[in-house]
Length: 72
Ligand code: SF4
Image (cartoon, rainbow, N blue to C red; front, side):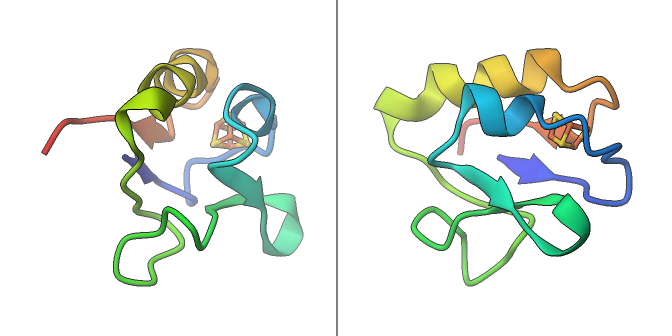
């Protein structure tokens, strides 16, 4: 899963739908929490299967389509 923070409009739906995965970063824009961050990235992460639906919900509700969820 990846967040394009340049597209983010800080609507915070992602924090609501996947609160353990997305946390507020600088300027309020979300980052991927360090627990799920991929290679220390704030924009890219890997989540376990049980969180897949949560990040999909965040993707569906993100008004700026800044979140992309994909399977590796
Ligand atoms: S839901 Fe989308 S626009 Fe809103 S804070 Fe999250 S990434 Fe940004």
